[in-house]
Length: 247
Image (cartoon, rainbow, N blue to C red; front, side, top):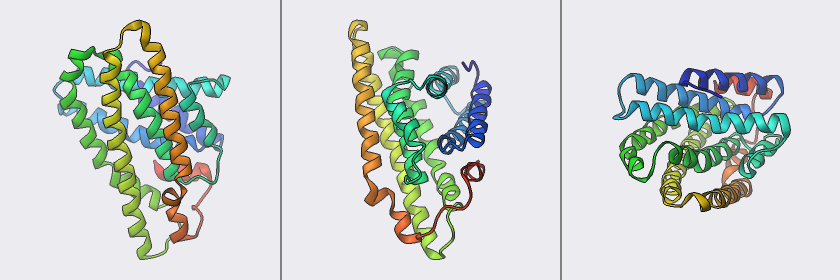
């Protein structure tokens, strides 16, 4: 398990390397998650948070949920239902890169972040983190353009259409991040008010709820696959090459 943010970055790099070696599309989400982690680390070092120690702790706990889920699934095939869906669909070549990213964001933010929040703070202390939590939202939204540009670089070019599709990718990523983080804050506040005897059952319900969100992302083909309609051309490169371009 990671004990520092540098440990988190190292372990995410190990996962990225494994994905390249094993042609796993889980590398798409992992490499962008590593970019986010590095950005958060920089913000902490620059003194952008009121409670840097708590945000550091949150970042580590949050990442360990993903690292543990990935490791458990790779070694045993077992993990939470919501992550299991994501890992299984990483084998699906019909989903777009954007869909793979949205699947990762959905589970890691709606499920993992909710649990990480209640793990580091009770109801009262959770409220104290709201300003820093919102600061992270701002940082993530600032990365949406970067993510969209990276995705666009993987498509074969079709002139002006690329700019238009890039805007759609950016809006989708930004929307998904904002909605998911708002939801995780709501879920964390709800879970923090539940007694210990009932908490496990509520977490299982959250797992099921987030899994259902995943199926919505899969089935939303009219929206999620719009790039195919306009570009009509495949991604450039193999899975390892695409992961490398997203780095």
